[in-house]
View 1 (tube, rainbow, N blue to C red):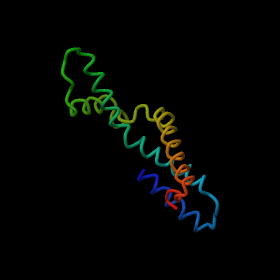
View 2 (cartoon, rainbow, N blue to C red):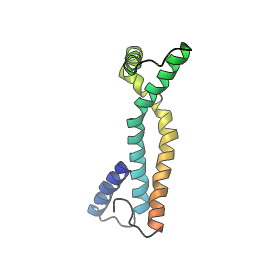
View 3 (cartoon, one colour):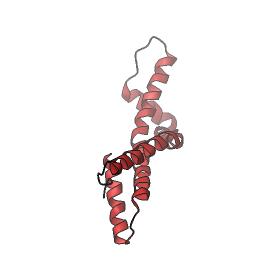
View 4 (cartoon, rainbow, N blue to C red):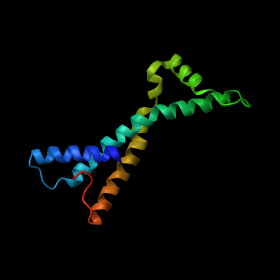
Length: 120
């Protein structure tokens, strides 16, 4: 939500400086897309670590979950920093589409209720 507001505010500023009017829908869509990309990038490494935690634990059934530091070290040793971004393109398609549509719907409903568009 915060990044959506931030992107929408920046886009409205640019639109005002270019004397663009009646661009609420376009700004809402672009701001929502940018916010969803940001959310995907921010949350993906944590999900990779969580997935690998359970993969490691399932290899050795009956074992405790491995330590966070051990999982991070193993990912880094096997693939380097790239390992924390494995599968990001699929996440953009799946999660990015969901977040974008949710934020656009949120902004549209706000406007239907007579509230100002996000960032305007």
